[in-house]
Length: 312
Image (cartoon, rainbow, N blue to C red; front, side):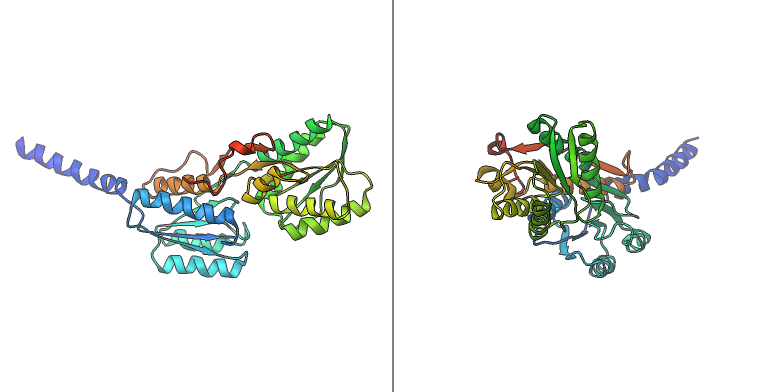
């Protein structure tokens, strides 16, 4: 009987060992490929990822690279992470669909892949801002400021999932106010200050009365404001999405920028690493998409805003 009990205990221990080891898995090597490390959004994201990864394992190697919005470059970076034996890859996909073969290759190599900021086909999970909500609150601000009546522009951008969602949220809000007239919603201002400037110059020339502009990100909003200044057009409400350092300055200064729906890149990365750690240890998230809420920064509350560059 005693031998039988020992045998049963040995069998139980054998089955328990893999689970115990799985629970102890920690990151040794984390690779991060991001749109552009020249953008403070991605700098903050990289910092958040590194900080959280090193909380799990102080000796973890964390490598953050700039893909510079070049798909081929991003493919090469992912190949490099695979060769280096990464445990986790965070990817800010240059192209959500085209990136899939690279991510499937990484997963086949046993690497956990988490998309950050935008969707990435083939990833185990994705963490991003609730961009639909961000578009909604930025455009609801416009509706309230205009009293539900006026001529507005939705200044579009590159057709990544985040931008599409922001525009969707904005349109949903505007449709609820029949006296809000959308003059334009399909012009791509390239996500840049120069793009916002050029598109807004064209709109100001084309439309004699513009009451408000929703720009899909902060750089476009700043470019929009510059165009209005150059053409001496005033009383235009400009809102956007990001909560970037430049928009904090704009909200405190002599501009027509009135609000920005904030993102928290640091926390996006922290959450992505946490989800990646869970997946590494056999625990899948309830949903493959995790959305973090956006809050509206305005001229009134910007003084209390803890921005991207705030100490953590």
